[in-house]
Amino acid sequence: MLQSFAPEFWLVDGPVITAALGFHYSTRMAVIRLQDGGLFIWSPIALSEELKDQLDILGPVRHIIAPNHLHDSFLTDWATAYPEAQLHAAPGLAEKRPDLSFTSTLSNKAPAEWQYEVCQSVVGGNSITTEVVFFHKASRTTLFTDLLQQFPKGWFRGWRALIARLDLMTEPTPSVPRKFRVAFRDKTTARKALKRILGWPTKAVVVAHGDPVTANGAAYLDRAFRWLKVNSY
Image (cartoon, rainbow, N blue to C red; front, side, top):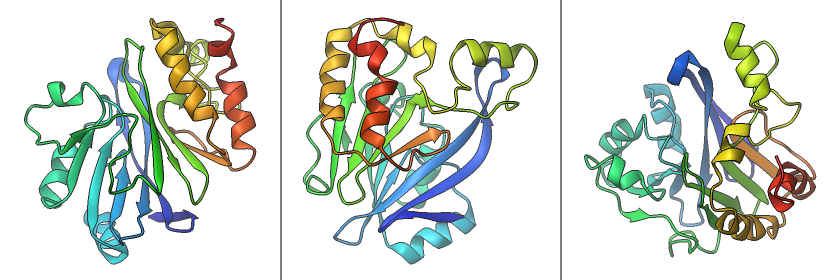
């Protein structure tokens, strides 16, 4: 279940979930073992006994990260299974989920627990969601949740396939869906976040929905967000 992606960095693919209008989405989370031995869980998927057993071998789960307010489906199960772990929310999620006790709302400043190992940038100005993008320094990997997506040809059927194609969800490489592009109402704020992200020495890019980009990540990100830099769709 755990797939080694880089030293002290694993990916886990979860079950397919059904979202609005019957669209099916693949799920993926990342696990980073910090220098203190604790685990940093990014975008947690459904928690099975098998997954829990494997994580317990790696180390204690210390930080559970909800990188935007759309990726909260499994937080209750994780908070219950790991009551000692800190729960960190993207902006806006605490208001959506008052049933959960969050340790922090994520900002551009990384908490002391991982500030020397993981950078972060809040991508605001979008009416769909505010996403926090992360950068793992040791592996030079940048993590995107929904701002970049890619589904294989044939993943969607019928009218959903047409919508997905028009929405740029089935491009050859992970792309920003058209709906997210249109939803950037405050492009000045978004560009500030993008400048920070493009300043990272990215080698690889991991996305929650799609195949990772494993080489030339900085150049790939520059191409993927060129539309935002030039203010065109």
